[in-house]
Amino acid sequence: MPDVYRKSSEHAYPTEGSLVDSFGRKAAKLRISVTDRCNFRCDFCMPTHPIWLDHKEVLTFEEITRVASILASMGINTIRLSGGEPLVRKDIEKLVIMLTKVKGIESVSMTSNGALLKEKAAILKENGLKGVTVSLHSLKPELYHTITGTKNMFERVLAGIEESKKAGLKLKINCVVTRGCNDNEILDFAKLAHDSNAIVRFIEYMPFDGTKIWDVERVVSGREIIQKIQTAYDLLELPKEYGSTSKVYKFKDSSKGEIGTITSMTEPFCGDCDRIRLKADGKIVPCMFSLDEYDVKSLLREGASDSEIARSIRKNFWSKSPGVETMMKTNVQMIHIRPMHTIGG
Image (cartoon, rainbow, N blue to C red; front, top):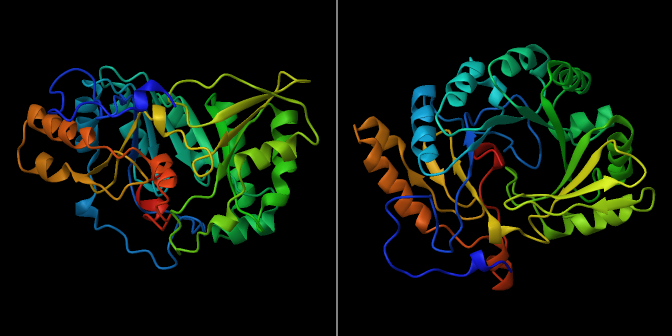
């Protein structure tokens, strides 16, 4: 376990410098959920009958940008936009350009279901978006529509992927693997990565489903996924970058393509976590596996200064949970935490 993952002194939180928690982990990446709404109903994410936030409860672009600026002053340099589905937020491309202008922000990217990318990819790239990660959980149209609760979206998403490539966005494909559902497509996705220069990342099924059907028996481990791929391809594991959520593999026989596994459940990476999340309703979430959330919207709307907001964020981030790794080691029973559409991953 890295040295960074040893509890620091219980003294008062730092009031200047980097945004740091009590374990010494520094925040560098901000995940922003711009909306809780989505045009899909993925079974591992969305409740059957979601209750959406009232529009007035959702942060404005100006409020989001202000929080991003405050966090950038504390060392945040990378932003990822998510939802719900970020592209259903009207004029989202305007937020992209606002965030790229924030001093200290080096990269703005997005996670999307891809349904609206065909129309939006070019303007997003033009406005400064660096990359897009598309959720694609099956290569079989019928199963894809079952998983996502949609009709006639598969070809539309593929078209969005192609348009993103054409626009010059760095493209990744995410696949949540669920036992008994799409785990028989692991080699198909590996072939996609191998043959088409795609970056495919396999994600372990996590307890954030809206229908609360998550069960550890449904989890296909990253190790099992790689073992399956190695029956067909020779892989080379690359050194893990600090703060990365994925283990990355290249194909030994090809310079094309890349495989990643995000092993949140079986081999957590809490020790060098450098992320902080901002929900659409203005709640700061230091750790997605913890129920702890801290309101900044009221501060924004009640006239607090930037320094007052920064002080509140520092205080709350200092109390960041050690993470799911510690929960597992102390035999805490894993339960449904929150629907994924409310936090954006």
